[in-house]
Image 1 (spheres, rainbow, N blue to C red):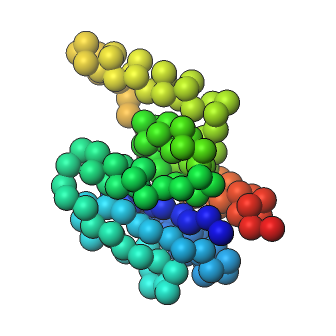
Image 2 (tube, rainbow, N blue to C red; image 1 turned 90 degrees about the vertical axis):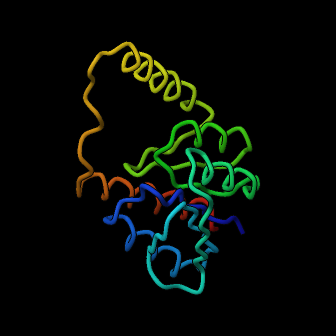
Image 3 (tube, one colour; image 1 turned 90 degrees about the horizontal axis):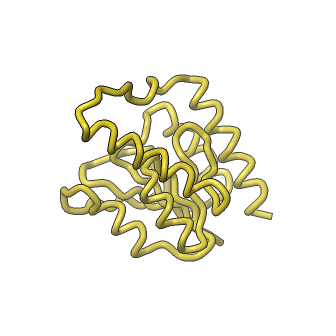
Length: 150
């Protein structure tokens, strides 16, 4: 059975009960990796791992532990790219399932926006996380788990 890894530092509170319900229902080992204490809920199937503070410490730990077929929940596109390159799966907080077919496009757009910001241009950040985003995540995680737990 695959494991779920949660990139915990920016994991939205609205998603915690959604994910915990699925973890409990399917009894999936889940590891929440962060550089500060994060709690998605109490479960025998959830392990919390705190790593040193640093830009990519949690990402590096996830990639180090990750095995083919595992699922990573993250909004970090470079991390998702590393996950896909290890033949694992990644879903973002707004319900996007990253894949070999789309990750390079997401990465290119992210890098372009970063260059624009570095040039001094002021850009809009992502729109605020909403209950609609939580619903999209719930639908995507349910579809993924239905497909991969049979």
